[in-house]
Length: 273
Image 1 (tube, rainbow, N blue to C red):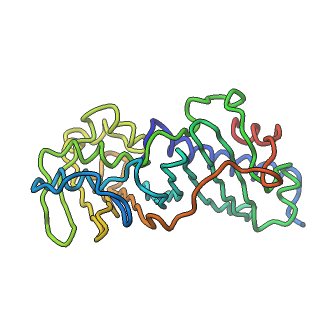
Image 2 (cartoon, rainbow, N blue to C red):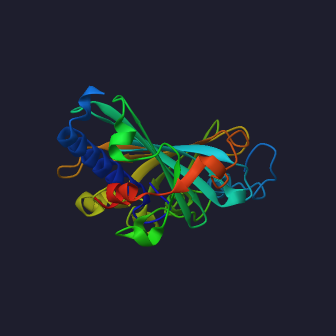
Image 3 (tube, rainbow, N blue to C red):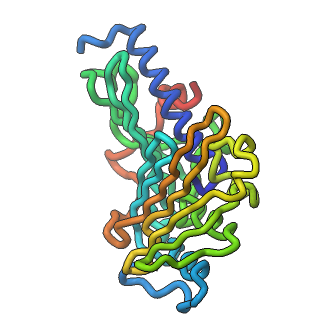
């Protein structure tokens, strides 16, 4: 679930492509030997559970917080800093043959974009791939499809508000738990949050996807879980978004000094395949 068309899906594809490119290169090169606490309420109290739930969704007045999304089998983690219009988005993938782990992180401030790649499990892999360990400042115009690179849009990276709005009614189950039924076909904003799901294959079931949301004692949305039914070759799955550590997550700034360098050609080769 993402705030712009293709962000998480593109990130997944980039990570998978990068892993494949790394594995192929390593094999050929023979490198194997070496509304939050302390913030003002965003809405007046309401008897309408849907309004209460929507008021709990993060907005640009919230302090920095962490998030994670479980999108099928992939977990994305990151930080959102609304005041800086900034976001970190990361994923870690393991490769079996050869064995190594790649952690890839994008940092976005408005439309400025940096990438950091951490390779572990094979000594000398960074040097072999000509990839620095520092942040790399990316030039969007050098990406094959710059429109799919992440940008900062708002403080709700999983589009939870757009999903909740599709529910005709939301039930207050008590203890901060809310339930409803989402329509994944409702509009482009909602559909863009599910690029990894074959909404067409779901048919009518896509219009009545159950969800459960939990609001913490501080008034912040902490989890949104959607129960996606099986359809065709697609297995039933849960899509889970977590928002947490409001006011405890680090503030995000542009990498500077010896933390950063311009992205070398090898970085664009990695991203563009």
